Amino acid sequence: MEERQSIYKISRTIKRKESTLYNALRSIYEDSIFVGEISQLWPDLPLLANLRCGLWYSLNFEFNCYFKSTDGHTNNLSFNTSRLNLHVALLAGQRGGCIIVDSTRKGKRFPDSMSKTIPIWTCVLNRAIANFRTRQHRHDVPENESATSNVLDAIGENSSSWDCFLHLPLWVSKTEKAMIENRLEGWTKELEASGADIASIASSLRKPLRPLWISQKTVIWLNEVPEYDSWDFTPIILVSASSLSGSFQHRTTSEFSWNYIAGAGDDEESWARGLSPDLFWKHAYDIISSGPDLCNQKIATIVENDRCIIKLSVYFRDPCSEIYFAATEVPPTYCILNCDAEQSHVTVQSHEIYLHLPIVNSKHERFSLLRNLPSALNFASSHLRKGKTLLVCCSSGEDISICVCLAILMSFYDEAGHFDDGKLFNETRITKLDLRRRLVFMCKYAVNARPSRGNLKQVFACLSRGECNPSD
Image (tube, rainbow, N blue to C red; front, side):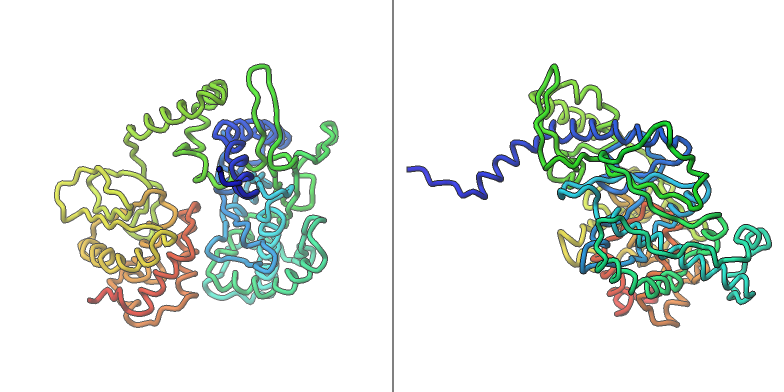
């Protein structure tokens, strides 16, 4: 006699059947049409993807950003100085605004990244800029925050009209709004203490930042679309790509029937089977036209063919030092510190200039980075002392390689980014604020940096305990 399945097992079986690869990709493709229509309303504004979900919804992103929904969750509200996204503010100032795309499958019209995280970010930045403008007006500027006359002209003397209010969507409760407002002053002080280049942002922005929200339910009269430069603020237009019509909705075309999934781009590890947004858009027509029955086979072929291509790419360089951090294979002329879990197929003239440390994410192994950092620092020290160029790489160029570079910069470089062979490190005691300030410095050059909290904790633990003492 067969066991009766629980309601939970039955619902999971149905969900797996509905969440097929074709359903997800077809849903993304349909939602991308809406994103394209909105971007054409303001074609001069740059289109940004909020990683990682948002990256699936267009072929035409100019830049990425990383605003986490968890920073906007109720009872977990935060302003994270390791994810400042200052390049977004600079870009908005230069171009008059920007459009950010994200999505959610939580049954909400907007993800919390758009409902709260980004509104908090715009408000805190506006307050920090207003404080900077006030100090400029009073001629009370610290030495490291001095500005040129051009900057002063751009900033203007009067900061009283600069909008420092918190702008939230109507569906955020008054109670939660009050909770956020009570913490704004503290978050502003954290930003100012982080070493962020507020002066550059202040000189770039002529008008304060302000979020606007657009979803598939938003009514827009095409003959009344305002020009973005007509507003008295710099718009951060937040586009939620997906339709709010329940988790699944059966749809039919002349060729295929399929189930629409709201926020299909979310949690790509659970459904994408190795397919990336770039690969999807390179082969979008073939994938969508293949239909549900052939989709999985088509994706497997595309992913396998892509793995056979050797890519050569250096992503970021800190101009104040001889350290690069990258995501893929690199020329053999560099000293290479490979922090990826897998060995890279690189050709080096000597094993002395190549070191592979199989570091994995803190989610998979809690102390992998901590255990390998001493070896990484010893390797870096031996080559940096000789004036050689060091390249640190991992599979993404966003987390592990960033954290290793952070440890190297903290250990062997002064605050100005000059190599001192550990002099400053040995004379001072590392604090979390020091680590945050150096990370902010790095993020000026690696705007896609997304170091995980677990890995940052391991860097601090290593440096603060002296387990990675560069003089050893």
